[in-house]
Length: 128
Image (cartoon, rainbow, N blue to C red; front, side):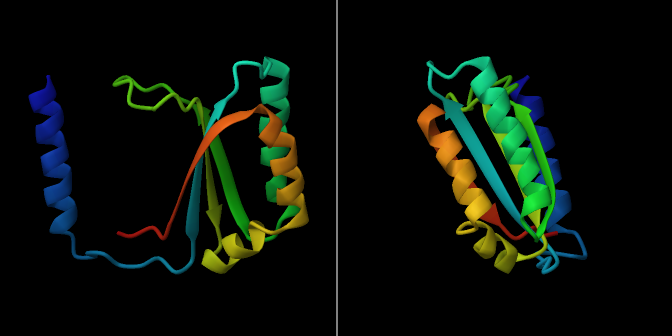
């Protein structure tokens, strides 16, 4: 089974490498992926309130094009105990740079911190 996963990954990489659009920057968007592991003391209501507030940021902070989120459903168990992922698409990198110090983002972080065990953030420009 692992061989088939390896083979599928190999072909995906090979097809991507031979693409006519190799490593083209997409200047019209910037991605911000955030992974949370909540403390054991965080209740379901605490977590749902945090999710709800996170999703409201799209309507409060200019430059956020979309927010998606989900629970870890890792079939490999490689999620390093992170349970929730939030995937934000910004209009560009400057929009993310404005988002981080924004008062509504800071208020959200204040709500989140007491319930957060650990966080992992990965920001990138999508490439074809």
